[in-house]
Image 1 (cartoon, rainbow, N blue to C red):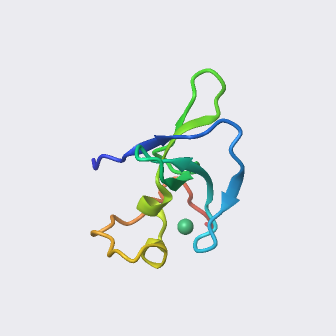
Image 2 (cartoon, rainbow, N blue to C red; image 1 turned 90 degrees about the vertical axis):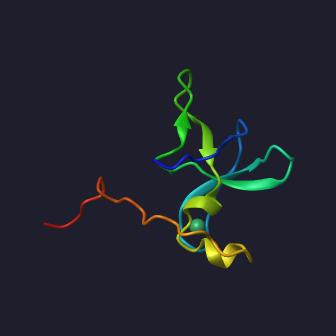
Amino acid sequence: MAEVKLYPVPPGARVATCKSCGSRFVWGKTDSGKSVPLSIDSPHAEPSPETGDICMAPSHFTDCPQASSHSKKPTPAAPPPETGDEKKGT
Ligand SMILES: [Zn+2]
């Protein structure tokens, strides 16, 4: 199980949609104060036990299937997305 760095989701952050993959994210800050898109729909995102809202989420760069188009840096062998819980069709 790969470790996924989670960042705090700012309360009341506006939800945006990734233009590359359509996933929802909010803008948060890294430890160094840089803006970072946080994947609130990620299976790694953690809801607050109090409110149920997502309070911790991974950088969208780590799970966006189009991450290579966001960043100039090459992405290191990203694992394929697991979609086992989204079975559709017959
Ligand atoms: Zn994306």
